Amino acid sequence: MNVLIVDDNEMTRTILRSILVAERHEVVADVGTAQLGLAAALERRPAMICLDIELPDRSGVEVLRDLLVQCPDAAVLMISGRQDIETIKTCMEMGAAGYILKPFNAEAVLQGVDAALKRNAQRLEKRAGPPASV
Figure 1 (cartoon, one colour):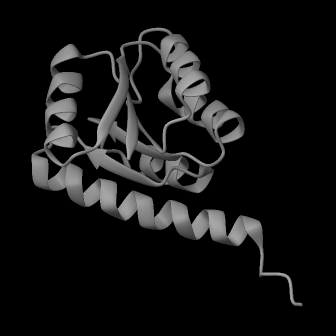
Figure 2: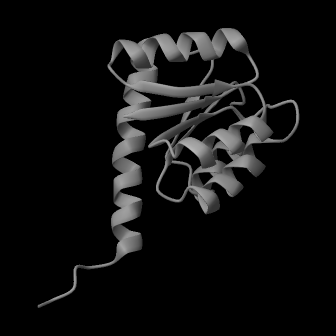
């Protein structure tokens, strides 16, 4: 699976990259701003986007909204230190496929990725509707 990482913290990007690559995922890009993240998402069309909420140029919640429109098939996994229930609820209701709290460990990331992929597959299935009868 190909993954895009959008987080302003270089250490977080490095750790996420290491965890994902160790599980044979391809990290197609890791960037530190919303603007670069949106551009990379449009260019690379990743299956999953790991998205921080606190970005220097825009809120990750706003970026989530754009990604869901511009890359509707991608699973967007929010990764943030913001633990307030309202933020988590907002992201999930908007269409995020999952939410991981910082600080995280490899197990939390991999479980979050698996759960997000399943949730996204269900979302895409619902969007497609029932199969046409013959």
